[in-house]
Length: 231
Image (cartoon, one colour):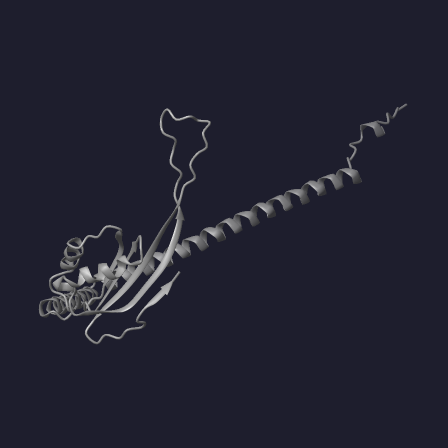
């Protein structure tokens, strides 16, 4: 009698493994994260390359302009133009110096000897109580402006008469005379050595003087005012 043995057993069957929904969502999330990261990296690299390209373009443009400028300047035509401009400037400077030399030689400015003779004349006429603060002489010597200070206003006419004795001052007339009284406080003197420190200090006396401004013209030069005075 034949006996049959059943070898079919479910435990020996190969089972298929299926991914769960959670696993699939996690995998999809990782995939999306990788895509976003790669896109960000690519975008950043694209922007960097765009900046480099723009900088390179600007440098190339600047170098091209510089090469063009140097080519124009150092080309035969450019050198010729620069040389012509330099020669023209040198000729203009030479002409100006020649004209100035001619004016000085012919006395067109009215003075070929300088103004030292005026200073010498003022030095030869010193007067006590008179000190000068300014001297202005026009280019043609037609007008002479003299300013200074005197202790008393009566010294001004005497000083003018003294100056009239100088040859360089003759032929002039006083076109304007302005006198202004001034008063300043002197700095108090320090006590003498050995003096009693308890004794009261002597008050400083005010310093009084008169400022004068004289405009002396030669010939028929216009006179603004004959005389002015302020107290």
